[in-house]
Length: 123
Image (cartoon, rainbow, N blue to C red; front, side, top):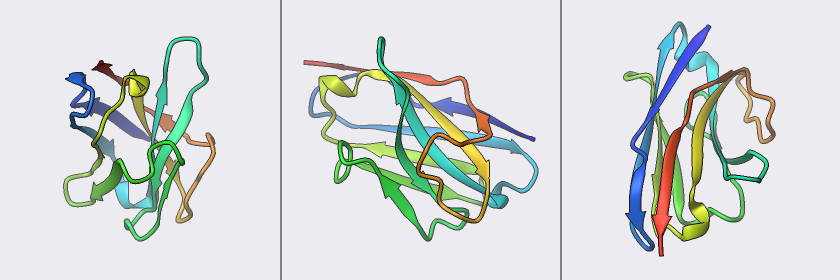
């Protein structure tokens, strides 16, 4: 079992940056690939980025490629999402998720989810 708690969301102007964190508790964080998702009002939840158990592989959806960076610290049991050049369309509730695998899940097939942190980008 893994418990996930996101933090770092907030209100930022377009062009600004935010760094989201997701702290994991429970056992064997290194057994899990991690992902960041978001869901805007009236839209489906989408996977933005994923990272393998050791950080050796990453995935990004086209809309955030080059602007967002996913990373992890397996000593601190934390995964991060650095978001730069934010746009109003990035406004959403952002979630982290975990899947027990040594692969790199690039769909929604994650096992554990956090409660989310709100990101609002003003124009």
